[in-house]
Image (tube, rainbow, N blue to C red):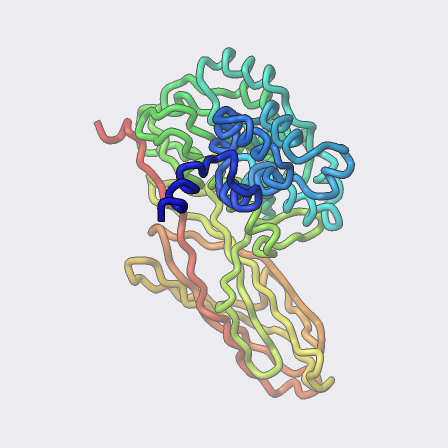
Length: 414
């Protein structure tokens, strides 16, 4: 017993085996790992064990094995060099860098011009200069994103999505930081708001609230919506799009790369499709996607504008004699109060499409509600091309539409 106690008394950090200590160190975060360097010479040596820094490089900076090989640096050096450059954004960098990487990978084969329009990242001093110009601090997640890409050139189509109707077109570019600073708002109604996007056709912008003011929460992203019933021009309602820049940007990217937002003619269209919003009648399937248009909507007076995209497809396995032509449409439109409107008429958007095996027909139309939400359902009437006296109805699935969360102007509350 005395001998064992003597051995334990002699057991020190210096005498512990290396492997168990490295295992313990592998569970530490980078801050604790750095602190260990100052405890003792032994821990300094062990904390510099390069494989320990591999996990942190991948977790915080998304550095791949290939990048490490190209730079010909050890993991610890890579971590320290990257931290020296963008360390202030360590809590945001991985999420935002992944979103940018995923977006570019998805768009390169589909919308190459859009990817080519992206600008190189801004420098720290550029972002500092903008803060001095506007007199406000930029959110760290915003700065982080702009270190990766400083917006895009003002081109069509814009990176932040498009929308096209017969007499209305919108395409939003992601503004570079200097252009955004030029549009920074100090006027009542949009005080301390920085534009994130801009549409050269409509003048529409999404704004980032860099300070809490006029009923807005700091860092919220929103579309402005002037109160058309107020005499005060500062009465501006808001459709809230994101709680933070990261929330706004990563959710948009997720919708794009998952295929939730379709790409049509090299443009991203912000239609939302509910997988359950599909109806099949015989050989014909009808599916619906919807989108809310803030630039054509208002809270005061209540007028909420939605567009929907219908896809009508006949199975490729259908018999040739099943070819048919659309004659008319019937809609049953219900708002949030339960008020019902019925609409029927010939064709769709002035056309009478012919559907044959394997063929797809798509069209876009729109509707408005005086309530914040509502739904539509109905049917199309077709006749067979080879048996013109035979008509039949094809169900249109019920699809719901709801505007984003909105906040009423503080000017209206006083």
